[in-house]
Image: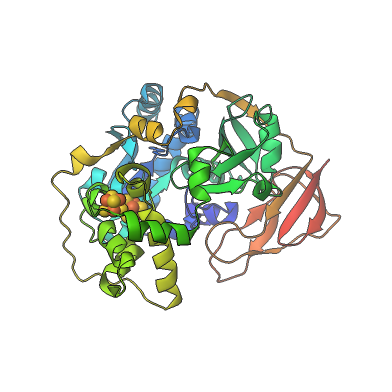
Length: 442
Ligand code: SF4
Ligand code: SF4
């Protein structure tokens, strides 16, 4: 079996993003293979943990991937402040006589945005709505690379390293079987310290913000990497509760057209034709400009405009999400009118320092939390969603009452469809099959 087949069998999807199946992504020949170890979202540390503790595995997997896709350049991107991780990777690179180069970056947001990272490493701008392959690159994150190493040993994806931080008694990086309830992970971390709380699944900028009630039944999937617990009245939770009507009214009445949102927009800075201040203006006008509104389609939803740039605390990103939805419903698609993109010469001076962003997000309190490491969870039950990430769901290949072993295939993607297989994450008995497969531990 070749590497791509092993990756497909193991059910690997992008471990940090939307969950695109990795065997499809790596079915190409490219010049650059880039590992995204920047984890630019404030407070997250799972990638850092993996690079520090699994550097041998990461280096070996990157070398194998490089051979499979014919990459001339193998690059691992990480922050220059990650001293221990840099040393660990350098040691592994030497140990395996690897040609991998480290790309060290300042701590800025969103250094880990795929388009930003590719620009930083290659100097090439991926066209709006394009993918790294358009400029001869492929990007995968550290978690995906570790999964690929395991697939090389014929092991399927069965767990995630999850950063648990914020209002919990024992902030930690925990090894969590896929399908474990989020509530159980929080209990493992000593429980939540406040009675009323909100959760962010992922980073504070782009993660999914949820209420305490919404996490009931929510389980860890292959794309989760962090749980941030905040008091219910925290600034971020309050912003999340604003309705789109309120946000539109704010845009109409309070936008001063200073265009700071555009000046700081990371996509605008690499040369993409996106001008959030114009979208805000168009929303405020009776006669809306469709050409301007279309720019919302190339917004990556990083949130720099609304959480950092805007002096009026308005929400250009939420407006973009709203406009995008409307345009998609009407079948509008983005089309590039040029292949030439000119990055802003001031780009380097407009990078958002992570430290200042943390302060702006009112997360300073959690910045210095020391995370406990190395603990795992042994849940009494897991519920493994049949569909995880982009693509088709899987068809169960087990029945209620079957005994399964950790790593055993339980859901298979139909022949010819795009998707990723799912596997048992614990030893146990199948207790229920719906849109998830429940396994009770034995
Ligand atoms: S969220 Fe704002 S800053 Fe980020 S890409 Fe979209 S418009 Fe630009
Ligand atoms: S930064 Fe805020 S106030 Fe200024 S143009 Fe953008 S949305 Fe309007």
